[in-house]
Amino acid sequence: MTALKVIRHGRHFTIAIRAEDTTVVVAAFGLPIGWEMTDIDKSIRTALPENWERIVFDLSKTDFADSSLLGLIRRYWQEAAVPGPDGRSRDVCILALPGTKMHEKLKLTRIDRRIRVVESLDAAEIHGGAGEFGQD
Image 1 (tube, helix red, strand yellow):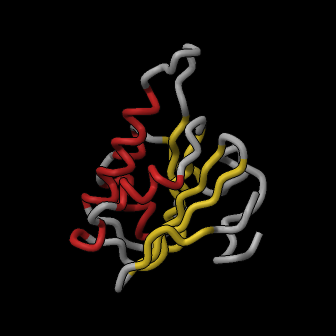
Image 2 (cartoon, one colour):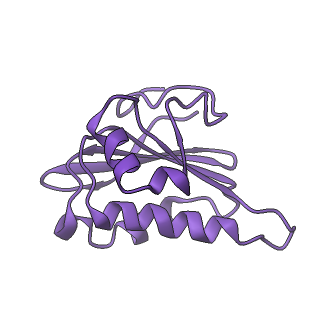
């Protein structure tokens, strides 16, 4: 996979993306909260390849996500469930480490019952780690 590219940097958080072929990792760092999430969807969509087949929202570097971030992920999941012109649906999953506050929040909100939650990029069938900015 290629290096993470920062697509949005706020006062309390950063959103970065990396793509290889049809797989995309969207990583959140810090505290992505309400008002700073404005236009995040537009930033992600601008950076996405048109032919994406899988998006992994990597929340392993944050312990917090409010309804704006979780709602954004849910919208991508809903969109991915609709089969494309080739009849195939796409995959959206969330990377959250077991035992973390984020993992617990996904359980408490029952998001894990709809959207697949994985504990590593390998579990999402992606090879290579999320890394840090500018690293592979």
